[in-house]
Length: 367
Image 1 (tube, one colour):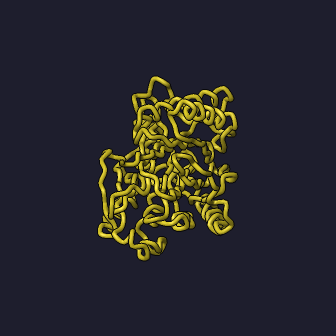
Image 2 (image 1 turned 90 degrees about the horizontal axis):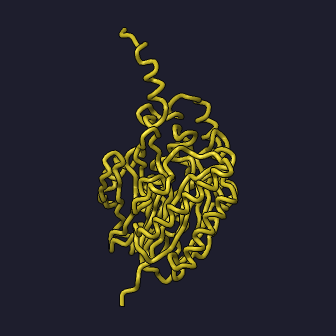
């Protein structure tokens, strides 16, 4: 008899920050936990937990409903709405966006929250790492996932583990058109890099093992459709990565974040800055609403239960990475409103910059 698959779903949302965009209020986290606990009691979920990075909340859920399950997505949506309502009662700062109950149409995708999901049969040992990033918009996982699944200088298993010798395939989403493409490494490494280096447009959304097409990683790669009277925003990024036994080891996944690469986001989502890997208790970005932060929660999945989380970045070996990120932060901030700290004009179309330019357009004269 075929063993029934388990679904691991991670839904993230910016529901309201305690002071500004810095952190999350305990009442908000309790609201999310209570909703998910009730769903477990009703048998909708196998297990659940709630994570926080900055002012973003992540609902981590295991269930048997499969990817894009309506009941699970409705639960996540109602929980996010309840958290937003609790934040409004506390007058917490919230980003603009649509969070009305009647907006749900069967899926959370495209409504604001980010969604990363995967379905798999549990192995004898099933370690997973769930990563959350705050103060970053599109593509912050492109470089780390490339390093984890395609760079032997990061992942020794690519040349030492027979189960990984055939490489991995990356599903890349084009945010401009909504289409996607699957590229196989190492054969198509160069076309892959040609795309995912453009993090404002091309996003790695999934990684599969070439030998058997087993899912290895899933990323939230949704873009919110622009609503009347509001700005287009990128959903909060999160990723799920399975580790060991034919996949990269936990240590190889973590190694990819030892370099604080530049990501898009920071203040108002309009700047570039270093991604700083931090323990849970340091995921409170305050300098210029940043710099961008990443947390990593490690779990052992056992019969649908989430054993953990273990705080993966709570490790002094990342101190030098954090120190370098601080130095890069200082350097980038000295640019003020100039590129490359501020993103290019074409990447700021969802901000108020076009409105400002329009205000003075008729004052331009030909030279």
